[in-house]
Amino acid sequence: MGERSGASPHSGVFDVADSGITSDQSLIEPFDRDLWLDRLARHVGFGRLSRRLPGDIPPSYLFAVILVGSIVPTINAYAYLAGDPVVYVQNPLFVLQPLAIVGGVFGARALRRRYHRVAQEMNLEERAEDPEPLLNVVPSWLPWVLFAAALLQIAARVWALGGFGAIYRDGGLTMVVGWGILNPLWSVLAVQFVAVYIGIEIVAPWRLYKSDIGVDFLDPEGLGGLRPIGELVKHAYYYMVAGLIAFALVVYGPVVSAASWGPTATTSVVFTVIWLGTVATVAFAVFVLHQFMREEKRRELHRLDQLFRETVDNPWDIKRYDVDDEKRDSVEKLQQRIETVSATREYPATFSIWSQLLISIVLPKAVQLALAAI
Image (cartoon, rainbow, N blue to C red; front, side, top):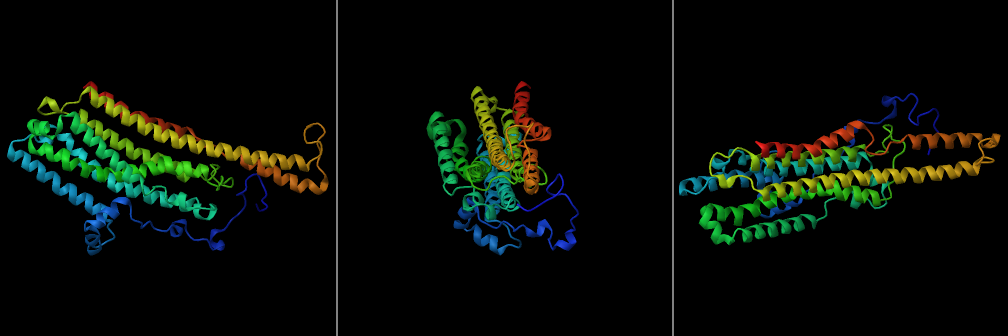
């Protein structure tokens, strides 16, 4: 650690123009990796379509937009002509479902791109002995596990409804196609977002906690250099909040006809379980980041305190402790470093952060309860 004077390690006059340092924006490399859904989309021809279109459009975007944009109108037009129930007539707010699914595909890449930026802002590649686990926080197996779980959930729901025969008798061919084909396809799209979300809220904080990068106590913001990942944790949860509110509007929104489309007690239980699950993820991320900073801060303070006491005379007696003249400069540097480390706040460190998290946690459940009471 270099010599610094004054109360702050960043005090003094600093001329950026003379330093040769370029803008932070120009130092950030663009994110151009394929996500899980991009790789799947390439296998079914959307990679070729992406290359032929102007601009750098990810195959997953094309896959989601074309799939939803073609299937939803087609299946509902058939249902209308065949006299089967049309969900968008029964509940107009059901249109939020395909919009949310497509939005999730775009949101997944936006979050993954932002994490790529966070990794560069925190210099993870240079600071970690093995940076790869910190740079790639979405394990390749995770989307497949989530997709398998989604298929099992769909199969269990079909079984609970009495099988495809009972579904056909109650809702016609449209409902059979919905449960047997559309829901698995929607799961493919939704899995991409959930995988990235879990990577940011659970995998990234845990791997950071287990890594060797430590805390940046020279961070001028006094947050140990963890503001980028802390802000991303909040940002990712905001996406989930938007999805939960859309879910509540779809389920509890105005039903124009056919009371069977209304919410049930099971619906409320499912919503509450999903809501509690998302709360658990953001709580885990905040707790792990807090523990990481807390432990690193106390470890560094203990190390500096030991050095200080080894340097001064009578280190355990405030009345008699003394510093030799030749050691005074070293002691002053140690004291400055101790002050710098002590001034580092542990995430989440401000009322603003806490209030934003609490509001975003309460909001989906409040919307659900308000809609259910109408």
